[in-house]
Length: 191
Image 1: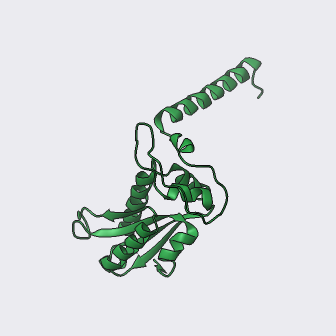
Image 2: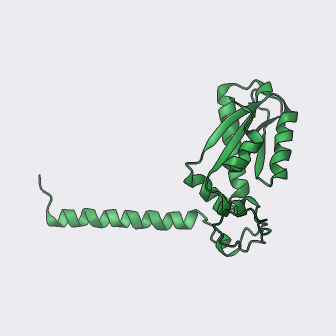
Image 3: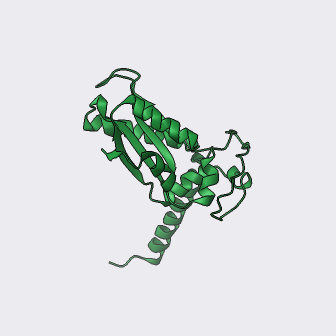
């Protein structure tokens, strides 16, 4: 059954209108930081000279840029490692929820402070590796190492409504260049 010229033209116009509407709604509701491009030098070299210190960001969410933003110019391969406390004996669903909280918590932490690093991670297919530790002390040790290496990290604290005690630290998330994150978590066993 052939469509009339009028029906075809109408369908095309509706399609283009929907595309334009979707584009403008996305631009309006998803804040995409563009201020980072004028804050940091555009160096694509892989030199080991010390990177410049992060600058103060301008804009509605002004905050100090995270050091990992500088690393996004020096490294291509980024990943996130989630470190789960195995000693808490969480169920599979609980672990999945806590890993989701940790991923989102870290993402929100660096959204404005390191947008280029997030973009680099997204271009690497948002690699996430889930590992385990056997104690809170091990988790804090890894967090200290990440902070020493100036990599962003986030620890999820559980509300304690279901399986575990309130204020239990459940998952540590670390984001950065794969080789640097591996220096911290490379010896851990997969969950």
